[in-house]
Length: 636
Image (tube, rainbow, N blue to C red; front, side, top):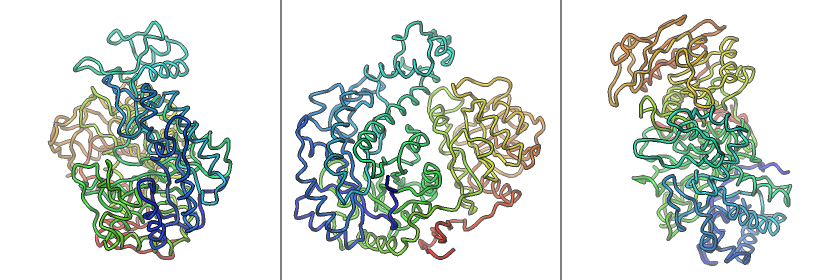
């Protein structure tokens, strides 16, 4: 199989020629050459324009545009067109439409209007994929395959009867017996015990004020992720049966609000990782959010090159207020991704649509045409990427600090009936990353469950709110901290095992109680909007707890709030190097001060900081100054 890297950085975006006349196609390829575009994603939402009715395929327009692109030196990332089923499919087979948590069957008209468990949808999607691969797998314009689009973005869970049957099969395979299932879900509570397999239904909406069993709901997250991943595998395997040459991917959504897909699992199944990233325009820390998500994607790729498949040239159309990007901001955004390992910068989309739900979404060619700052930025970025092709195929230098990012803990913490509704798993992870970003410390993201030997590649491992922790993971983290590694764990870490069953004998299990030396007796959340003061002058909010120090050094206690006198920050030096426990959500200034002290004590090198990013890739030093909106690429 060919590598997806090509010796140059990719540049382009989603191209939807079926929305335009052939006269516009000619203008498009001329402008693509002017901008330096060398790759387009073709056919993402084209199913209805390829298959007019069941088995009635029309490829004339697609044949023509692929030839035109090839003649102009533009390669194709060919989509399987399965992301948005056509009307004829949902009319003929209405059972493919997904059903909501409340039992409402959705209607045709949006996108991703399918149940992931539907055998009809899977069959039709596979047949369409086979048609495309048979027709285009040997075309010289083809560079890679793009399966579906943003899996799970709009239909992450379905609660229909077809899903229910698939769910029961999944549960049976996992637990084997009803006795084991009842034990895993703790079904003696609220008379939830199951005596027959057909009693096991999806965790649909329950009476007002109550919610589904949390262990069952956690498994439904797992099941839903596996079902959607199965869709990807079905199309991927259909491609691979015919084409064993071109690499296959699907675009992840490495964004702060996207939690339903466990991309650690997905990354094992793609030939290369690709992702979409869109800023929250009103977020004052949007540049740091972008860096977080790009580093997270780099983690999914395990340090190998990956591809930014979609982002925006300017405003999007789906936020409350869709603020335009500042002049040159699209260049900075792209460069931040490229610095962290992306093989280029791709956008949604090439030409702004004049109708449909995304007609106000920015594009490389805006509604106003080429006499615009957006177009000038597009051309400038094309020149910048072409001038730095030495970055293509190169890996980034590994960091000395790693953060464990755990989708399953996020799933468990997305449910109701927790000690406080303020618990926000990604927010705390972003807090810690932001503090290190401001200090000029780079962070690698790693999957949960790594062995102590794998963790030993890092001077410092961060475990923010790692709520679910089985015995194996707990043991590996304890071994890491005992044998030369430094660990920082937050509140609400190690609370439950992988089944979401509470560990007894002090919250946080052995990791917090033995390795970090803190005995947590009771949670004492802080009311929303209330600031809590610490004895070392720091401030925090949202969380505190009643605790005792067993063999930990107390660095700060709460001097106000409901847990006054208890541990806020502790340090333990039992291992070869120190580790820390943080029992509250520090504010930005306090978090930065805390991490500055840790970085100094561990002698972790810093570079940049305070709004300046410095990243090394392929022998190049890439600096992005967000304070002055400037950038530079030089020999390292």
